[in-house]
Length: 88
Image (cartoon, rainbow, N blue to C red; front, side):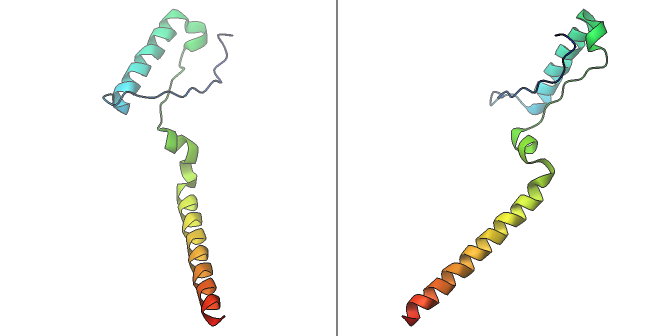
C-alpha cells in the first residue's frame, strides 16, 4: 500500500495559517517520509492548492462568460415578458 500515491485529500486551514505556512509544513512532512521510507517516497512531493482553484481551474473565465450570457438572456426574457404584459 505504500506505493499508492493516488489519493487526493481535502483539508481546511485555520484562519491564522497562510497557504505558504501550510506548504512549508507539508514539505517538511514529505522530507520526513522520504527519510523514513526512501524506496517509496524519494522525489515524491506534496502540493497544496485552494479549493476554488482546484474545482474551477482553467475553466474560470469560461464559467464567468457563461454566467454573463445566462444573465443577459434572463434580462432580455424579462423585458420581452414585460412588453407582452403591457400590450395585453
